[in-house]
Image (cartoon, rainbow, N blue to C red; front, side, top):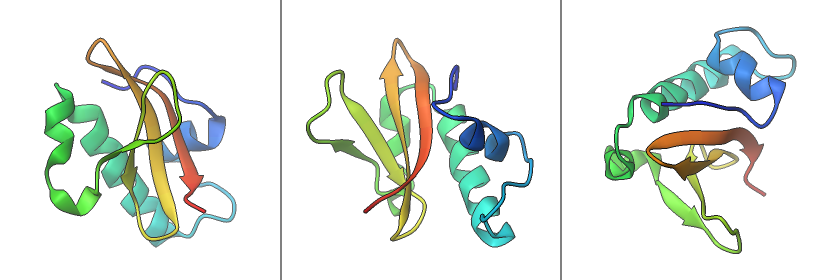
Length: 93
């Protein structure tokens, strides 16, 4: 379950609100990824489907995880006690 967002833009996307400079097709894909993220009961649930490219980000303590939206964008987050915190939609590069 998602319990917190890093920024308002990510929360707006999750809530289905329009966000300036995010095209509607990208917004739909982001929402689908956020729905999959929110439905995860355990971290292992995020390995499927493989197209999400779930991975651990290097250099973060506590561990930070990410799933891909596309080649440019990803959603990163913390997994703490089977809850998802600090969810952030960000530019991969």
